[in-house]
Length: 331
Image (cartoon, rainbow, N blue to C red; front, side, top):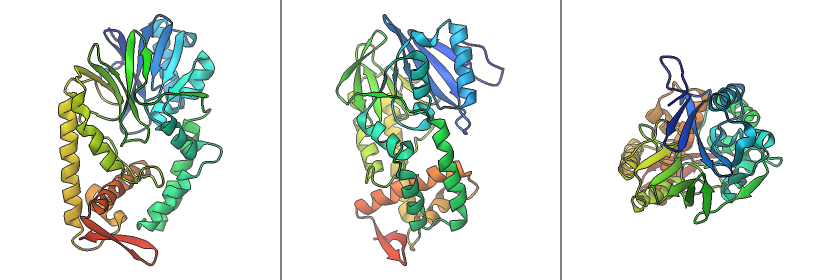
């Protein structure tokens, strides 16, 4: 059973046994983020409600009306990670439902450094990109883009922390909170060992390589962290994974191995391009091209930095400072 949509789009919502997948539209190339509703004896758990935007809120109004659910039927909101398309609507849902919002302490800490009252990370990202060769003509567009994100996450919720290794009742599921960082600091997945299911956020996605980006002062080697946790994915027996984007899938461990191989190839590609010294900005344009929106460029630049920093930490490349700009070259 599913909610009808036009002939070119997937349905707005779809049942997978006791899990309702809700495809909440987003104004990005990914088109939608997956939210999940899971009914329990005390109400519904809502996983990753989407970002704060009119099109998302209209989608939720339609979904709830079609399912016969009220906001007050939502007993808790669970956040896999702090990115706006997952976290952004949590505060508004909390206002409407009067329910707790559950998130890891580290994920919430980074969210506050990005969009809280004493935010400092957005300016640090701009300064980082300049130091790594970004053309100053792009700064205004980048700063405007980062500023626009505040509206996508306000109001902030009052949060309840959950940490890796703790258990949480999600519907009829006794779920284990699993540390799955890399794509985002503090990222959690929620594993149901009895039915071999996992709500994996953006940790493992089909047909998409999750962005692994460097944010200064958060994780000094996010790609290394991500690869380490991907290699641990086989320790979980998974028959179906519920991801943050695209469709639920079965080949969880296999897809994790594919992502490891993808990043190993990307590392080799980037190292080969550094036979002569280049900035991360020049390397980013070599790998991802120069026809990117500011939204895409931000992620491409952060991903390039995550890869070259990992190469530097492994001793495969050397970083050199030239009048305040960092260049990388093969060792």
